[in-house]
Image (cartoon, rainbow, N blue to C red; front, side, top):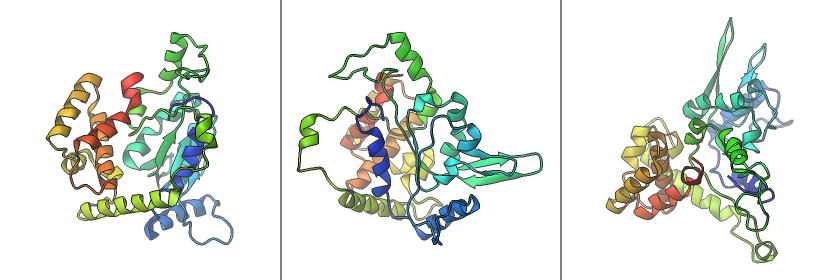
Length: 291
């Protein structure tokens, strides 16, 4: 999420667990084991039944994020297993810390090697990151002027590498909330009906993937994505135009197809249609404006 300070990026991230699918018994058991090993299992609790939300500070070390120590212990990526790992102020994290996340993002596991042993911990989490559009935070803000030079903005954005951004499915801009929206008493949609739709989409995915070893779109391999996400004729043309104009990588191409397949599932559509592809492309704002 890219947006000015106070736009609501952290609030949105913290609300995510409330709309994620219910944990299965196996997921709850996996998460409970990790928290039991680290001594973080809540008192009087035998099973971790809610999806974890972890938000480490940007000063964290690579060992704290991935895991390590003389006696290897799980890091934040494992503590967020089956839940959300939120990295606020993404460019403020040290580059070496961010780069070590590539393995867990790709494989869903992290391996800690020592001279006498090697331990593998599960690390299948939803990565959510937030950043300002520039060092001062107000580039593109309609209300406040940006004080940064083009070089400062470029250096700031370059702190997050292209390979890491390629592994993030959705890039969205979060505009400042206007007074009328804040004062509106009608409010928006609550988490409950959204979660109902998400659970329904997850059930559709389970049925489609029942013959494989995965149970959700996020776990599909590139070949599975392309097989399950074949768009209609209009969608193919739209995707071809977007790929040519944006110069997207093969990984970004698969990400767009995967997101479009999920949007179609939320619509309860068997086929990925052109408007599903269009919406998925709109969720790649960094490809369009920053790369």
